[in-house]
Image 1 (cartoon, one colour):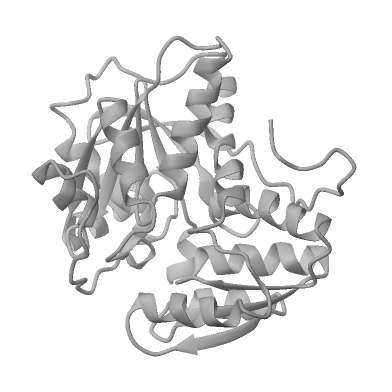
Image 2: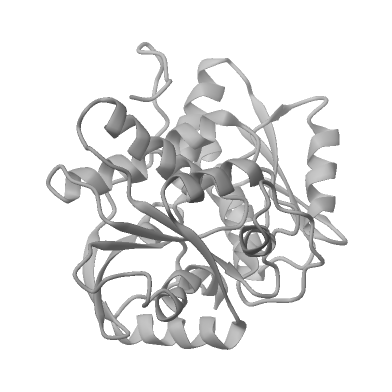
Length: 311
């Protein structure tokens, strides 16, 4: 199901098959997909395993990437496993815990002043001399995130949920899930796709704005500070794809503020689930989605990043 040559040596740290745990949140029983239990602490390991496996199969010995944290930590971990050098361009204001995690794997960390987009431009310049292992642009990354959908289908005994709630920044998990559920439908294994419900932080919500206005592609916004730093993306790279996937599944986009995010993080913690604020946006959205989600429907909530990344 994945585009890695049969003879290639797969670069793996044991990613995948994260638990699907029943949790009662805000009076409703949902299934939390514990992506924060991945080897590097986020769902990004799904895409990184496929990407780095292909990079090694191609004989590449150095990669560059730009990321605010989780994708960079994941890439640094898998490159360490593969023996590939990694240079990571990060916003200078990124979480200290995430920067420390990137560095401990042996990657070279290059802080870049200014907005998130500046680190992307710096990485693209560096990519003149090294492979650009971008989780935002590289199609191989999406091939890995499709496995989220395959696993949910398998864990539900060969069926799909009614709803999937996910935090969205650039949209690699949502687009990957859409393609993965689409693969299952094309193979005749399921008859329908679940509704994809995207969640953004109010402080930086280009998808929410575009969805509300009926646009096919989000317009750049002016980002404001938010505790959900992992999805604070003012100009998403997969804008048209994300909105198309949401509309094609009858989904929606909602936005939550920082107070709601902090509250949801505490609610999850009281249930024994320690996630970073970015992940808590998905739980916070359940309050606003209560009119759209029927209590008897099967709803999966993606908890994408570990709380230890934002202590």
